[in-house]
Length: 214
Image (cartoon, rainbow, N blue to C red; front, side, top):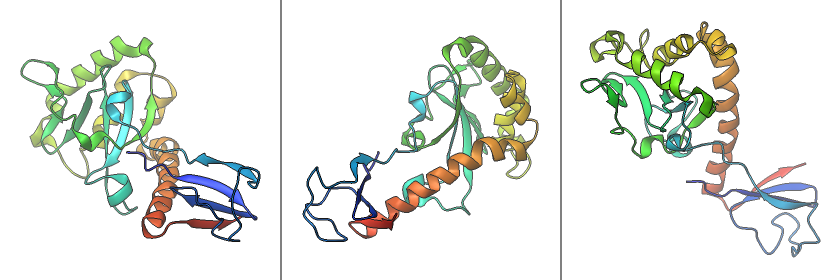
């Protein structure tokens, strides 16, 4: 899903595009590899596919995707991946990603909606057993049944913070005690960086180049 945004420097300008042109769009000089102040590079894509990041905290827009639908005023949805990369989330439907009858993992919600999300934090394989154990136990609690959901006070964010506190994993668990501190350290930096990429992507949907003076 990476749109492949490229950047090159020429004539004191930074030029963003998806295809390197034959001529500089600023000075119209023909481009060759010796003309660049800095060789063209691909702008890092800030989003990940949740299924490829086990033991992680992931976030996406509640509706739609980041590149095409997200604005600062829109709500975000947060979830946890287990050691297999299945997303476990809490919403008005209750817990998704765990079959509460068989008490096993479920991949029923692993559609394309989690293919473009922000990775807030990921743990290494040493955490596999305790991560899955705590996540499964949390998910089966009556606290996360559908009738307990409240958009303002008992939601997906509440679930993830409760999981992190129960995990008792040091600084991340400490930050999870305070929703504002957690957002400040783990959410805002990622969404800010993503916002710059989204803005650039939308500029390039409207025009062939985006030019920035250095």
